[in-house]
Structures are given as structure tokens and as C-alpha cells.
Length: 345
Image 1: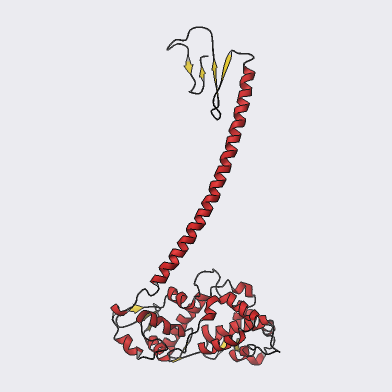
Image 2: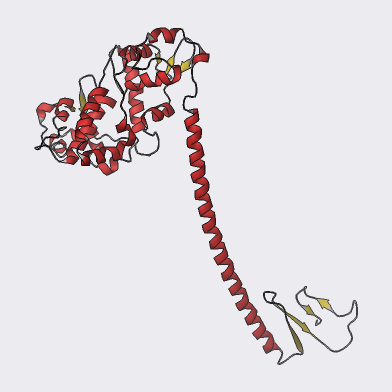
């Protein structure tokens, strides 16, 4: 097994074309802080050693002392690329395998640049220049994203990119809504699976593993070359940092909770104002009903001996009708409720 090492090449190309502001803005708008990563040359010995412990069925490394894996959280913390933030997976469409369609994105492509439905990375490289006669900025941005996909993330053994991925860069506004983190991590798993089963090239974003191992085990950093195979074989569980991102995660959670509380407070204030407005309207409606009842009581006084008792504001109107004759307990007097006493039958 050997490592398909490509990260340094990608960073070198990016450093050059990012001087074109429109290209930089377009790419950073999609991949954010990932484009600021400055990883050094990966330790191929470490990657090869880790691959020997890779377990296909669990997608974890089975070290002599324990089982451990490169989790989605590890991936996000090391790359800043989120997983499952967006619901749309990175698309693939074979319609772009038609040469006339592919030329809509790469105007200089011809059949000699295509093999088995894939475009050569060397052809993509021809667009990545700052020369005066360069292609338009959007074409350069598209070519660079495809270059990263084929040269870094979704590598193939023959240094090509499937034309079906052209659909992922056709509309750069939509490209921002794809779940790139999930696709890249899945490709890494697939590359390790393939390397174990075929004993061929180790593809995918394997450079990440060097830094992942350092965070958990404290050894293997690319700057310090060590006999990492020895550290894997003789490591004990107590020397592994099982939660390397804990402090950062707690800080992030506190920030998120603060934002949520502020947001909830704003929503509560808005709802309180709505309730106050509704209460004012309700009081106005009650006052209107009281005025109508009072007018109706006045009308009744024309035909009956009625005494109208006006209650305090908001208390409604109470009527008492008087009839001749004494009132006695248990007699013909009945109570119709606390608000109205009616002695009539």
C-alpha cells in the first residue's frame, strides 16, 4: 500500500489563484475556513501504519489496546467543514459525460482529455493560472473545485475526476448548500476500505489522519518524525485523549445556549406585546358590550319598574326588579345568579 499524497500540490495551486479576488470569494463562500488550512507534508509511514489497523465493518482502527475511529466531530474540528448541516448530498449526474455538456463548464476540453467518463486532472490544471489570457473567474473557480475533488478528496488511482461531478459546480450558488463534509469523510472511509481489500493506493483525504492521530495520542505530528508503529503497538488506553475537543465543545455549547436564550427572550418580548395588544382589544370589546347592555336596560325601564345599578368600570351592569308585596324566606323569591336577582316567576 502507498499513499496518494496530494495536499501540498492543492495548497500551492490555491495560493496562486487566490490572488484573483473573485475566485477566492467564490471558493471561500463554499468551503469557508477550510481554505485557510496550512497542513504540512503528511507522514506517509503513519498513514500506512494506521491503514493496517483499519476495520472495514466498523470503520474504526483496531489498535492492540482499544478500538478508536475518526468521528464526524473529529473531522469537523480538524477541517471546519460541517457534516449534516445541509440536507443535500453532493450530486452526481452522468449527463455531464457528454462532451458538449462538459464544454459548458470547461470550454477547452476535448475527447483527448477524457478517459472512461473521467477528465484528467492535468487538464483541470491548465485552467488554474493567473495569466492575462486566463479563462473567466467563474470557470477558474469551477476548475479549482473539481481539481480539489479529484486531487484531494475523491481521488482515483489514475488521477482523474468523474465528469458526473460537473453538476456539483454548475451552479456555484447551489454548491454552497451541499453536504461536503459528509461526502469527504465518506470518501476517506471508502479509500481506506479499498486500500485494505486491494492493498493498492490509499486514497481520500488521508492527510487528515496524521493530525487526528496526534490529537488523540500526542505523537505522530508531521513536524516530528517518529516511529509511530511502535507507539500504536505499545500504547495503553490510559494514554489516549478520548475527548480532545471537550473544552472547545463546551465553549461552543455555551455560546449556542446564549444565542438561543437571547433569541427566546426576543421572541418572548414580542409575544408579550402581542398579548398586551390582544388584552387591550378585549377590554374595548367588553366596554362596548357594557354600553349596549346599559342602553338595553334603559329601554326596559319604560315598561317595568326597574332600578339600574351601575357597577364600577369593567364590572358589568346589575339589575334588580322590584315587585309589590313583602319578600319572605322560602317564598316565591328565586335567585338567578350573583350578578342578577330576579323575584319573578
